[in-house]
Image (tube, one colour):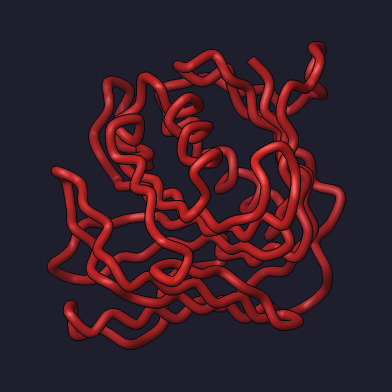
Length: 216
């Protein structure tokens, strides 16, 4: 049951109930490849603030080089009901920023791809712990997330060989994620929001290895 919940959550990140998806291998050639060595995904639902979902990655190679990236999703009303909609991307990698803008075309995040300095945003992993922190705010018309950090601590056995195909997105891209990781507990620390404590639910995961493919 846990594995199916995780798989459904990863799908929801990009589909956001306004695009369709299928869990089958792509029938076309892969055009972009990136490798992730650390990452995590969780829901943050703090009283007085919008319900959001955050997905963070550290890329250690591939077509867009080395860098970090964050996707911010908000729980918003769409024509088909409420869903997590991508509203912003933060990255310290210029080629990755251009790629994210292209992939997110037609979604709110297209207009809020934020390129920052390497020292302003970091994602790294030590064994079964992933830490992401940012020292500049994530600014969108929907919400401004102040500087904060997010820690994932993996537990139980390895989740592996899970392949998810997402798309086509409004931009025409289809994204395929093949990842290994763990179910995780998440802790969010945000001084401006006066919050230091647990976030997430049973769907929270951390990634230790991921192949990310994008085709259009």
